[in-house]
Image 1 (cartoon, one colour):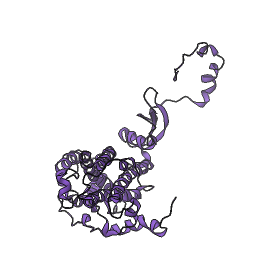
Image 2 (cartoon, helix red, strand yellow):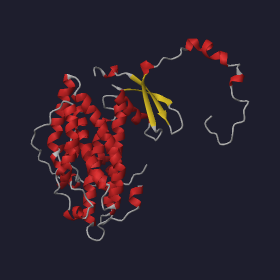
Image 3 (cartoon, chains in turn red, brown):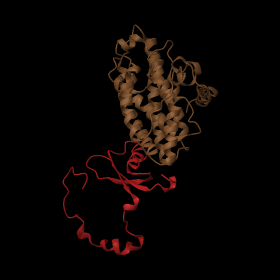
Image 4 (cartoon, helix red, strand yellow):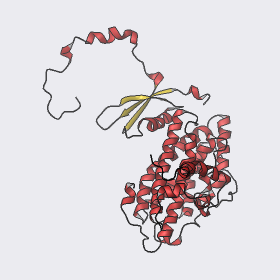
Length: 96
Length: 267
């Protein structure tokens, strides 16, 4: 560990309960993955927010660029046939 | 009143409530003073993330202290509340070990992690045995606390490994931290303060019996961290008899002054 400002950034994903997927909760600094996981436990699950945690080096994430927003996302706007809105959803299905 | 206090009857009711209160007071004072010291790291630790981690750990210790002091006070004649015991006793009435009361040196993170390692490893061994105490309340408090202190131990272990087996400087400072705390470890295993009857009836845990298990956990961590087990004589202690270090008075002054300046004040 050189300067603490050199600690890499980690993105934290929390699974709230069984059956749900991990959701991005925020980010933190940590010297390595093990410590990142523990920091995530202390920062993001101290009020029982989760049953499982992932930490991912922020540098390992390839993100879409805001500049590409038009070509990436706008074409989906008028393709309503891609939505499964023409089906009846059975009662009792919560997470579709 | 916390849930663990609302159930169970003291196993020793009828023959030694004052002894049981005294025992709970020792364990409660340990946790209370450790919590108060740990609180000094908030906004002063090496990284924001560590501030939160240490604050969580301090609050776990405080929670244990509240349960234990509340229980001890309920057994006293006249009955005393957790606040009476925390804020309105003087130094000589506190029964904590000296390990937990001493300052962090010059706010030395190596000292903090060394102390947390030796302390939480001790608490883990103590509480895991106390879960089968013949006293239902102590057993319930311990059952909740044992998971907490296992995490404290893990947190300290992570840092001791990284600092001990880190850079040349971190190694030297981690070893210095360990050396600073080591003379105060012996007091943890002093059984002389625990009433024989409480031991015989399975209410209390014999601290001297924790030594081997404690060593069994500490030694592999020190070895992996490339640290040397200090060969230092025990300090002259006496926390269980109310004999404290100079730094205890300052800690109590900070902890108690608000409650004493405004007795009975409420949020």
